[in-house]
Length: 401
Ligand code: HEM
Image 1 (cartoon, protein in one colour):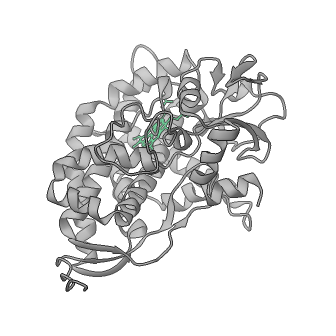
Image 2 (cartoon, rainbow, N blue to C red; image 1 turned 180 degrees about the horizontal axis):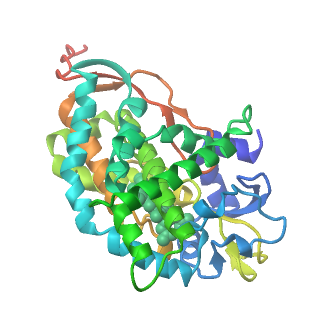
């Protein structure tokens, strides 16, 4: 198996080897072209915040990067930008996406989680990705943005087409982009005509109001990024967190007994099995030396938060799930000016998702011996998560002699 294949199959094992033997490695990137993969904690954290590493594709060497090409109306987003445009837009979105707005969402998020679990009933077998981890974030993000229920499309099929390209359907990603563009154009027109108390209406007011402006492309790209980023990673984090707890039943029991431990547990679960294997690709604006290796300007640099978060030089016994550990400084949500805008929401959703699930089902067990991970270099997430669940506690087993 080539390195790329190995990384998809066994990311943590390969990252362990790379951190030790080749912390700056030349690999085939997500577009199949050569890229530099950085895996040690100190290097990844420093590079995430290094202003010489640009997110703007115009700094890529000619012919050196052929990643996903979105139309300008979806591509003028924060993850393709450097200061000063990034600073301007991040400030504007900060005015609309406030911590108060996230706090107000906690009660409706819990209601949505309970509602999804009501639909599962008292006992049975289900795929928790399809029934719980995926619908919860899409409902939350659509509520936050103010996307009316009858206009919520099958966003999952679009994001899947972009994140996990299907080799048998090369046109699928392009079709998804066309569908998304149509959806957002129509949504913006609808919101302009009928503003409400939601994030999208507030962003439109910023766009159309006085002072620092958003261009129309920037507005639409921002809405797209918030919907996409707010959905995609959160599904994977909730799924990965539940999967990890199923592998550690004694730790799940601790959380059932004392739910006040859940926020610390979510931080550790995010470090241990966060969904972001690779941060957004970066392009050095000048030659940059990392761990003794000089990377020429314009080449593609891939930083791995997942590898950094299991670096024993930063976290002792990194492959052990330990809710008591100090997780401060983990980079699962990024670092520096591009630090995840939705971090408070991602944390709130994952905490509530776990609390509602553990509260409801004292019996929760895997229904499949092996997890099925999506084949992606970029994001770690499960395709399905089959579980047996029951609202009754497990029957005590007689002691074995
Ligand atoms: C578990 C869930 C999430 C994870 C693991 C995650 C992870 C990340 C990471 C690693 C970055 C930095 C990327 C880089 O520097 O290359 C980022 C940026 C971002 N995230 Fe998240 N995210 C999550 C949820 C969310 C949510 C719920 C939202 C919105 C509601 C969101 C919106 C954003 C945005 C807009 C950025 C770009 C910020 C900027 O460039 O200034 N994310 N996220």
